Image (cartoon, rainbow, N blue to C red):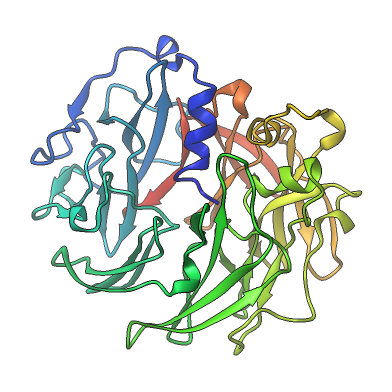
Length: 416
């Protein structure tokens, strides 16, 4: 990926004043970590969900937290949100609590839900300032919950794995990165962690943001969850570069795939084409005999964002390069950050695919959310839409539009 950096880099070069289209917001003071989440309210009973979205203006961005009591809302109530000014804020849900990473400080705050369906701060915020964090970066890519008393947080600057307790909100140690994680002139990247067999699997790769260049080689890093140690580091050159959410099927097969950005290099610079890798049940390395080549099922097009959705079916984003053109001055980030993607369905047994009905061209970097046996897709527009996100629900093989969010979002969780 890196949602944490490349999305910000592209979006901030293509800002538009989305605030002009928004009504005035009645919000709590997100800059005061001692306040309860005033303005973010749910209901006293029934389901409760949280969504965080980021809105760009002509200066920067602010994030907004909304609590939703239904998945069938026609719009977000902008009078009942909590603001986190100064950039991208983050949310995660675990064990009945909501964890909020602040946009402007290196803190994560734990909230519980009271009898009124409102968020109440539970204890003091946990600060990662001693590790040099400047924001509460805290999403699926760098946080992995292992138990009620143990979680990992990956430091994307150097690959350090921080061990912390989500119940007491204390840091208890860390796993230093190996020398192989460091590569001069490049920034470190990784996938989310996948847990199986008492191990955590994730990849380690690199990117040069100035040149939009990804080296083709990367590592599969394997951590032992009992000893908190890195136990294996396996080099791989197929399918550069993993960065998408990691998915596991019913049998325990783990799938690794790429985010949208590496597609630019394969088209503009003839870099190796991205594809999909898997780790079979009982195995601890990538299957040497299998890859999913997007071009073989998409009429020769490049793809990204492999998402396993059940019963041997998957979704991918497919880039329609025939809708575009480029020359020596084309910016790679803008090239693939455009509305030239369509979401396809894939039958993994037949290895066939087709566009998902109900969805037109979009920005490609969709996020799947499976809640209450319902499959939702958070689908951003491209740069021309300022990455505003529409939520769709997939029903009977067709995508139906649901609520439109006022900004970019990939964070949607269930609290109860």
